[in-house]
Image (cartoon, rainbow, N blue to C red; front, side, top):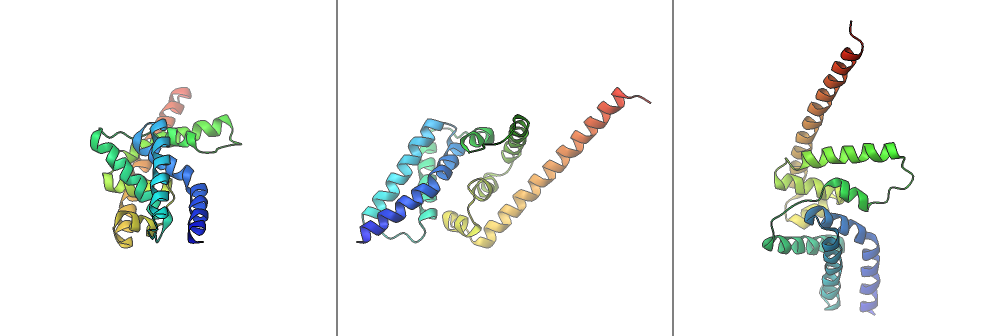
Length: 187
């Protein structure tokens, strides 16, 4: 009876998490076919663990941990690269958007990706978990082994840096717009 319950819970978790896990791995390995393979392997390892009768307190955190371990194993033999957010966005469902909206989103994502790459690795990872993978602070805490307070602090510091970079960008952009207007309509 318990194996039927585990199977049902696992299938529900797969339905809810597979797209997020794929996006998470894609962001970290920069190869969509490898990401698909690693996503399958993630769920296979999680299923084998469950099937062997082992207890899992939080299946979502456990699956993310398996995925992270696979990514870490992958990078032990390869030089790390990251996937541009534009490619992660392409994996998402974005029906009903106009071409202009699509272009604005891709431009914004390129900017975010650029700024994310300047953050220290720990901050970058926490921001990705929180805002791309949509994990709660408690889930990130369980996944990383850091306290929830520590996770909050790391995310807060990263967001402070990112906000400052966006303010600088917006200020520079506004200066360019104003300079262009002056050229178009002198005196």
